[in-house]
Amino acid sequence: MAKLSSVLKNERRKKLVKQYAGKLAKLKATANDEKLDDSERLIARLKMAELPRNANSTRIRNRCQLTGRPRGNYRKFGLSRIMMRELGNKGLIPGLTKSSW
Image 1 (spheres, rainbow, N blue to C red):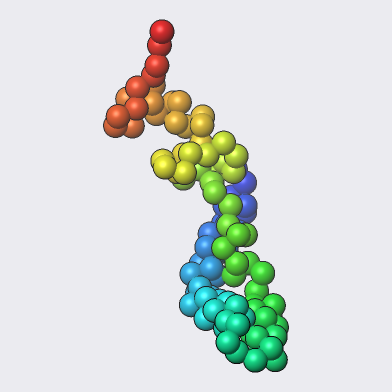
Image 2 (image 1 turned 180 degrees about the horizontal axis):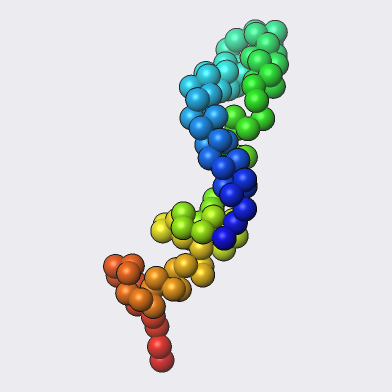
């Protein structure tokens, strides 16, 4: 089980990303538009820099939904490798079987 503070910090980051997503996309489009004047593009980049760091989607960490483990996650299921194995062996994940040969 991961530290609760780490899990909650990640949840706050997700909330900030959602809050600033529209504003960030608008500024990014302005900054990358080559039809605009260079000064306008520079102003857009400076405004992007003023946004909170945690408002960027790259700051979000993929974590296991059950344990909060940050490493060894399967995106498709949202679970860590350890929980995948446990739940798979119990037959709780539909379509997942333990291979044997």
